[in-house]
Image (cartoon, rainbow, N blue to C red; front, side):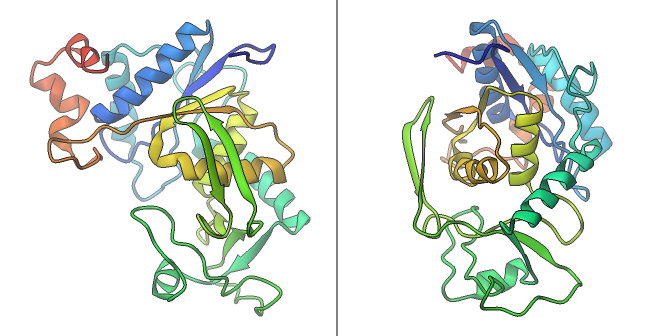
Length: 279
């Protein structure tokens, strides 16, 4: 696999909304190993845009747990680097500029529908935890402009277009815009960019060459590829990891406190013991 002249640049991108668990560690360890194998640079990015849920204690805990586990990175909020700042809450001007570019190009439109409005729509199928497919209530030119209060901005997807990419683990992937996913939010009514916009902007700005993350974000990759194209950005390569589940087959989440790195460390489990589970 060849990477640009800048060399391999990977990233760890945790969100400080809870304690890191074993599933995070396995995906991050894959990212770490791929950076080492490619003699690359690893960036730590603090994705702290979820204001109500992100807590300072989770930021410090995240750094402590990652270092305890054995991770090392070359750029990050604790080290700085050439593409600082590395906390998303400090990068709002970057996202605002991208938002204004999308707005000027007519790629996005204002929407006053709440998530509950979308869920109630009969034409909005909803699978698992993925964003429900937007039924087009506020999509121009068939709708009047929504009132100024609580307006989200949505990306208008090219209905019927197949968004295809080759994943480093799962191989060929295809998602049909308007069928597998609909018009998605890029800027929220509380004046915060969405995950889809912020991640696309940051991966480009930080010169990330490969994104390693969980398979639950495969469909998000299709959305982000559309954002990259609309902003005239060159997308990175992608490598999605299988998700780790508990004994009952349920995907690990931050509510699984017993499998958090903090709890495992307190129980006397060593990082070496945990890493052996990943091989």
